[in-house]
Image 1 (cartoon, rainbow, N blue to C red):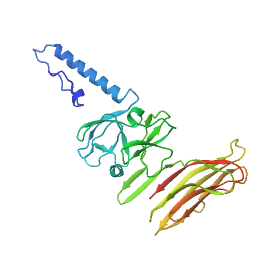
Image 2 (spheres, rainbow, N blue to C red):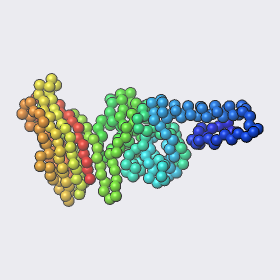
Image 3 (cartoon, rainbow, N blue to C red):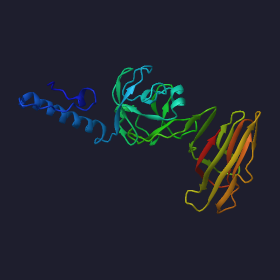
Image 4 (cartoon, helix red, strand yellow):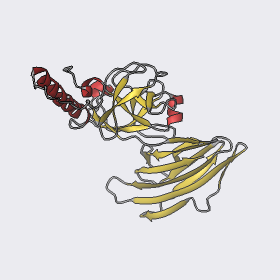
Length: 295
């Protein structure tokens, strides 16, 4: 009997032990049991009990080779295989699966950390910096730290100040038939106003024949909170032959306003739709979260 368990060589279940009248337990059998135990222990450590939830996948034969820190998505070529993430592959797959933990060649098995895993900076190469979001850089297939996620990004997760990645992918692009749906959370950088000048809080372009349903909440406050305001947004914009029109009857609703603050508006300029804010003669910091559903 070979001394290596199939769990260590081919990720398979060992054949049942057949015992006849002449069977005698020997050192080879003991080594085989040791291989089984240690193989199971290794998989537990690699894939379950050491801050990583990982699994072995088959790297598609059409994929480029991968190294630790690359990302993979479904190949959309052969059922059950994965491929190195590229813009085209991500568009077909719709979502990233996770981060490669060990280098692998096309056609081989590849160990991938998936949802719920914590992957250190030694693998992702995410630098020490402010905590934030992580998307897939479709040009390099690597994790990339960003301050906000746009509807065109493939969200991979979040990163702490030490560069540790928490994998939590999100479906931000989905292709169905002839229609492309794009949606996602948008967290614009905070905006500071000191007077009544109208300031753009968020803007994006809308393709011809496209529509966008934009929702969200925006608030502002003075540092000591003596002045504040809050507004909800629900706008609907269409691009008809290159002309944008805002169709919602009431795209902005005031929730609270301590000081007659002009507040939030939604408008269009050319092929760009905008969320704009207007303050008063005081220093106000505006922040919020938007959600865009583009079709």
